Amino acid sequence: MRRVLITGALGQIGSELTVAMREIYGKQNVIASSRSASEGQQDLIESGPFEVIDVTDGERIAEVVKQYKVDTIVHLAAILSAVGEQNPALAWDVNINGLYNVLEVAKEEGCAVCTPSSIAVFGDSTPKDNTPQDTIQRPSTMYGITKVTGELLCDYYYLKYGVDTRGVRFPGLISYATLPGGGTTDYAVHIYYDALKHKRYSSFIAEGTKMDMMYMPDALMAISTLLEANPDKLIHRNAFNITAMSFAPEHIAAEIKKHIPEFEMTYDVDPVRQAIADSWPNSLDDSAAREEWGWNPKYDLASMTTDMLEKLRVKLGL
Ligand code: NAD
Ligand code: AKB
Image (cartoon, protein in one colour):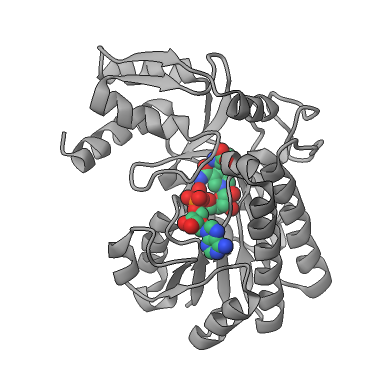
């Protein structure tokens, strides 16, 4: 049985992954952590082992890994794209030094490391449609730069020190449980809240801007499956393209309208996030993940929208 430490566990992915992993490995075998215990998520903090870890503090990571005899670190603590453009120095510090600290502890203590990369590793010079697994990676955001560096760093620790590193390039993730933490794809979560609460949404991403997206249950399945995948089959260990759907704002609005006919969308485009979105792919080729570890998402735009609206209605008491 694995003993897993999750960093950034109170964020959009971690808050759900912690629960999912506790079901797989047992409550006491999954240690949640974040930089502070006052980010909300009190239920999660009280539902099993929780430790305060700022990932820029390597000694603290080592202390907790030794204390709980951790053998696997799922590293989620990060600064996302939009916040990263507001504070590039913070993005560099958390995303690069935090990952370096995690990898150093993993090397010393013999832990496996699973950490997500992102579609942000691609840039304007990358082929936009059906973006290949192995292609040009010249991102224009600090977030993207840290994610490319992260992929390379994870490869390095695997090749040089034998650390069992694994990771996927997540597209925009959509979930009803926890709000996203300051990215460019966040509009595709906010739209559901506003559709239910106000019957309208003002999109900060322009009409016609296609990006890859995924519903959270598929994202959780991706991490759990890749973590347990046969290492002999993994050629692209730290950087698997994965996707479940690709759409522009008008497509998600049209899908929501099928459930809420009076829903209206307007546009108030944010130039910073629009420039980021324009630099990312329209759609990814995820065939390497399908071949090497059986990636096979369950949700498309229609089934995700039905489930999101149903779950959010309950959550918002509507
Ligand atoms: P999030 O912003 O929701 O959560 C990140 C968490 O990390 C937050 O709770 C934050 O408080 C914490 N954190 C920030 N600085 C920290 C520090 N110094 N020490 C410890 N904790 C710190 O992010 P997320 O969406 O859950 O993303 C998790 C990972 O997945 C990141 O690596 C991100 O780049 C990647 N990813 C996410 C998406 C997405 O759409 N959510 C898409 C692609 C990749
Ligand atoms: C963001 O928009 O920053 C994230 C991502 C795709 O990495 N959702």
